[in-house]
Length: 170
Image (cartoon, rainbow, N blue to C red; front, top):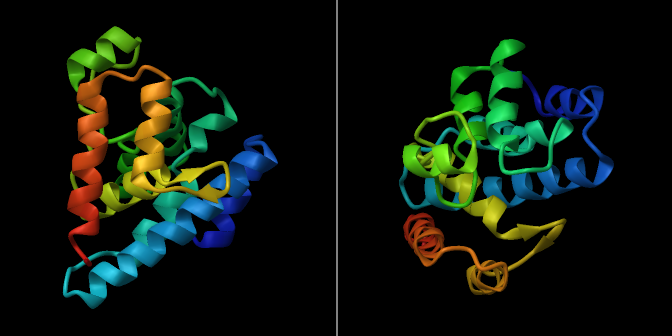
């Protein structure tokens, strides 16, 4: 597995904007905090995978800032030989997941984008709680989503993911 410094270097070398890199660092910081709490509560979580996955979750933003950044990041990561577990975190970090049908409607490669592993869920939830480099609450994230007229089913998924991840250590 690559190191934290190598992950940041990958983002830089592939043209990610400084603000995207700072966002990734903050998501990684929050995700590691969550993972440590889950570990302290007796859950088995790969801390290194959480940190590197969180640092690289927006790898695709080096090429696009649209919804397809997750699929693009996944493709980039696979092409350069990033561990498959990290590539899956990149692919599955959007909101609280996207179904195959939703992916098709959004013009994404038809695939299941739901986070499955604890590591994927922790990174997706941490990303939901970081706007730029500022930490926000689930309530604030949901309010932003409603303002953007995100479908209620997606908002419910984000809320359910929050409850699941925070339930690991609360």
